[in-house]
Image 1 (spheres, rainbow, N blue to C red):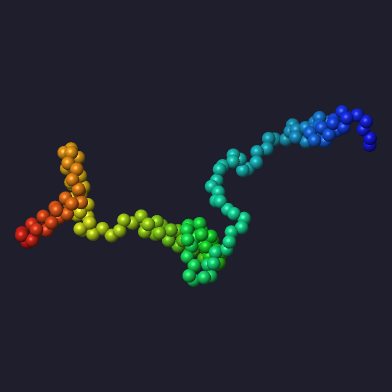
Image 2 (image 1 turned 120 degrees about the vertical axis):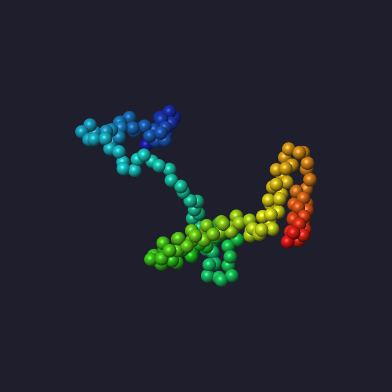
Length: 162
């Protein structure tokens, strides 16, 4: 086809680019038939759900190596995933329960301030008592030193009385 006029070429390009064919056919394919009931899909309303981040390719952790220890929680999640893929289907529930129990135990170990001995408890109580006494007095002495002095006084008194 030969076009002699530039405006005809531009009009054809515009029609190709912007698809002006909808006016010819209308929106018949989108119209609602009057004899049907309204249709609502079963999965509506849409509810948001939590998603986990995922990469398409991750380097396989060397879980077969006995000396391998993941460096951080992200590497741990990949290693745990590799180990979890090896669990037989009949043992999945037990494995999962044990995994959750170990997570809770790890969090408790991380948050544990250490073993509380009677001496530590006594020192903390003395420090708290001194703090409450000083609140209104304006005295700002070292509470640790005062707690140590009070402890020595108690020991000396217990030796004398008992």
